[in-house]
Length: 195
Image (cartoon, rainbow, N blue to C red; front, side, top):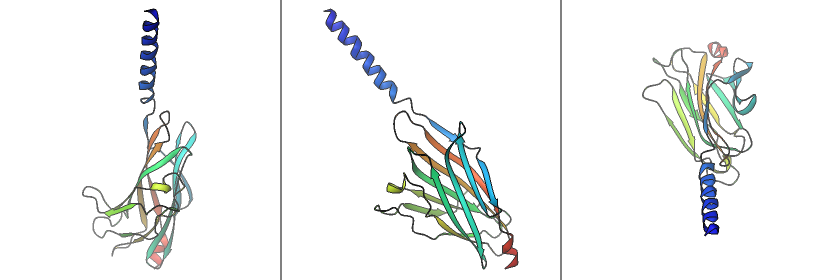
């Protein structure tokens, strides 16, 4: 009889401990990144927690004729996977009257998987163009440096470009954290007035 009572209490404790493990992971939003500026057109948003980098978005742009060519890099710490990327791109000086045209240039794909799902659209309640990238497959655990964009200003002259990003990261196990990286870069391309 004591043996049954003992086994019942041990098993109940084991179930309670196992059930509690699934709630150890948490979801955190990091929305106060540091901006590292190498120039007015080349900047990086760095997201940290407890002085440790969780991820970053780097943007490097150059002006060619009447357009801005942008290359991006998304890095995230080991043990996390990129679930989705959202970039909202706009030129604040002309976003209402003459919005910029935005295009995704490069194929975004990994070594062996099909390309991810990409959507471009104009939001109803915000300025600019939104680029959403999901279903990253084998790119999810890598540094993603294959997102290239072209931005063509509208008919009005403009030199400022804003990029707001939301990057969803998932942790690798029950004791890890999921993160939402939320921040905005403000870039300047004065060369656009020279074209």
